[in-house]
Length: 217
Image (cartoon, rainbow, N blue to C red; front, side, top):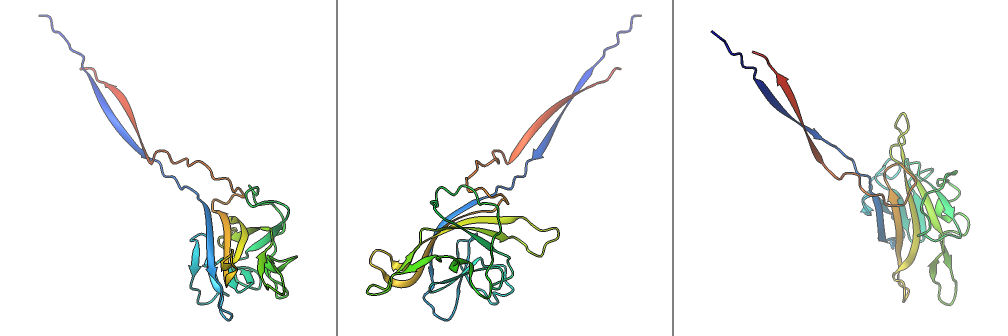
């Protein structure tokens, strides 16, 4: 008797799902008007949120970046707060042409002078008869510590800021104490202000691998 032996091949298809997790950094670009009309109390701004925030104790809080009170402007660092925020004055360059925050010694507020009052300051007061407050054509680069107490030190955020106006209506110069700023803040730890193309094209990618399991009987 002839016995026929059949060899069977079984194919086992295994599907492996790989979840690709991506954390997309964001270039925050905003124009913000701050009500700084109060002569006694500061108005605090969080640049990442793009809004004013209520701060119970600015000396210990990391929730604010800049503070405004009439023409006075402070940053969360040095004598003003725990954030170690520093600034550099960028002269003779337009806001749009600042594509990267420079390296250098960023200066924080001191008990002698606030960062935004250094040099010519952020504004010019025209004096009589108009008594206008007009922004100077200056761009500021900011270096903001994400967590100044972290060990090892955490990355910095970098921002560029310019002052646009001091009035509710900057054309008629009515409603003083309403400061408008334009800024861009990069939160990926780089100094670049060029908006990058998102790399998170696929949030989930499925790879199918077929394995051939050969079994002889």
